[in-house]
Amino acid sequence: MTKTFMPSVKTKEELEALQLEGLKWTVSHAYQGSPFYKKRLDEAGVGPDDIRSLKDLQRLPFTTADDLRDQYPFPLLSVPFEKVVRIHASSGTTGKRKVLCYTQKDIDDWTHFFARCYEMARLTPEDRVQVAVGYGVWTAGISFQMGCEAYGAMVIPAGPGNLDMQCEFLVDFQSTVMCCTASMGLLLAEEVNRRGIRNKINLKKMIFGSERSSDAMRKRIEELLGLEHMFDIPGMTELYGPGTGLDCIHHTGIHYWADYYILEILDPDTLKPVPEGETGEMVVTTLRKEAAPLIRYRTRDLTRLVPGDCPCGSILPRHDRLLGRSDDMIIFRAVNIYPGQIDHVLSGVDGIGSEYQIILDRGKDGRDYMTLRVERDQRVDSGRDPELRDRIGAEIKKQMLVSVSVEIVDYGALPRSERKSKRVFDNRDK
Ligand code: ZN
Image (tube, rainbow, N blue to C red; front, side):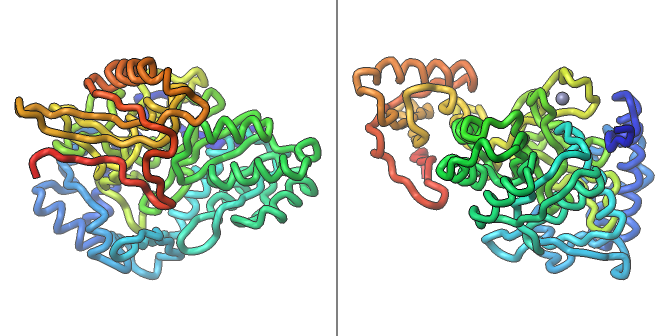
């Protein structure tokens, strides 16, 4: 296939030049089109003419989820209303929902970079893509579909749920690619095996959207369905929606579309950049977005940049999978710690379950102490506790540079909840 959706630029220098051009355009566009941004920029003492290099990004003020809620229902609007052709909203549980407007160009841009996701996943026009994510104002299944059609593969707009129908489509239409959440992927994989239809289907790839998935879950899906590749597709409504990046077939991190937005990784406490490769909060600035541009929008999502070059040779930089939310950050002996990092370390240790608790205390010596309470795996004998304790302690020390004491408890001893379990218990001076 000759048509490509990859960036027009070929080198990192050209990419940076494109970013600077986009940044200048965004600041000028937002300043002229949005009273909110004009006020913010004036207050920060920085205007469109002050953007001369990418370093000037750091002079710009931040935008937050509160700003979006304060301006409900049409926040950050920077174009005349007649240019808006669509809205999407996030289905947040607290306070007012975040609603974002799109111009036709925004939709076209989104479609273009979503098509790039399929190119990154090495699909061909022969592929048949079953889109099993939601359609509507809260979700953006439509972007999976529009990107697929632009790419030239065949889309099956199945929508979520309905395992009967999904299985039927897999057999009848011989779908080769499935787009769904990881939990839906697992249900489907188990259903396919329960029905004994694995040899009647032709599924090769899965693209997982908008949900953290454990390595164990992914491995199980891969085994049950015999997949060649599983990809992670990040996305948030504020930044168009799903499709803002994808891991390539080498799976070394998520290539993100740096020609559409700038990603900063900042320490959520100091709001200064963290050293490359370290975990921090994702802060995004759009380069072409018209209706609701983002200037240093604090996503509260945590990840890290992946240093070095990818074997695929793409100039598009990579970030890791999402490691949790910055609101969950713990400061322990001057080190920033995220529960997601502990989760990640524990998932690499055999012999333990997935449940854990983090307990923080202040000792008589005035220092902070951390205890990690971890469940033993159901099939493992308590005689292995000392070995598990040592191994977990050593891994945490190695990967996170902090010392913890580890307690191993019986399988099922820690409380479980359908919703998010409370894992952090901070008993330091209250
Ligand atoms: Zn790559």
